[in-house]
Length: 356
Ligand code: F6P
Image 1 (cartoon, helix red, strand yellow):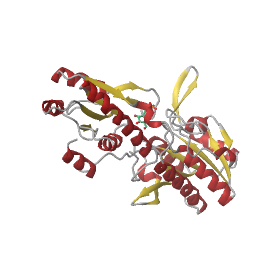
Image 2 (cartoon, rainbow, N blue to C red):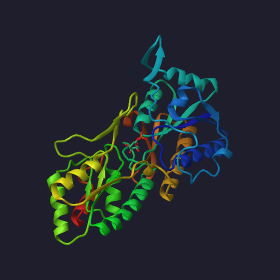
Image 3 (tube, helix red, strand yellow):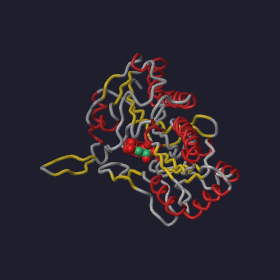
Image 4 (spheres, rainbow, N blue to C red):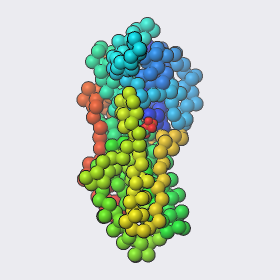
């Protein structure tokens, strides 16, 4: 092993730079490797935008949010729109990507991403490329690992925001609905909701009944409580209903953009109870900012482990955090799988008992 490339795919996430730093510095310092950075995720891979990454370029980035390499979450090398003869066709351009690595004598790829990125990484591994995956997502929904970096920062940001919503809700005697990210998994809603003492927490995993939510907030109001805080995950849906889709994105590995459930709940609860309701959508704020110490350290261990695995001749695995330590699982075993919140999760039980 002489030379490796690193890329960040999918939505950005606090801690990406910490992984890039750990990968690059471990590779250069401990193993004397040459490191290349692929720009803008799979898009730059397809377009052959691959530049040398130096030790200096990865200094002073540990605390910086985002990714110095750039990312893209609409490009899939196995299904990429190519215009030929006036028509655009979805084409497998993965062989070109592999060629781009061969041109530079790059032996292996460290792929930092979520489930979409890993699904393609597993396909590259099947084609013979040496790949190590590093799990990233604020949603914490990647299968095979107990936790992903970025999640702790997103929960911290959401919790701080919900804490602030409490005071304005109380001043105006309102029902405040805070919509958080998470796609099809309610991890951010559950943890930020519980951490901020929300009155109602709504997860995609447990479809809600509007009547039950309304009775609960009316009950609080009758008891003299001046406000109610509802934390809802963007992928939540009413029992028997559909997820609210904000937008469909053409050619995206994840073609549906969720969002709008907060506004829907505010309207529905106001109509049914007469209480004054407002929705707050936290959105991409949850993906920004400096990573928490937890995410910086997890990202550092992940990045270091990725290079140690490659140096030991291991390939086609995802670095994971399981049972309190770093290990790895086969990439193929997690491709296309997501990890949702189990209905019997301890925090659900605790929040229910306490009153959320
Ligand atoms: O997967 C991370 C995430 O932030 C989800 O929580 C959210 O549904 C999605 O990405 C938003 O993606 P985009 O950046 O395309 O708006």
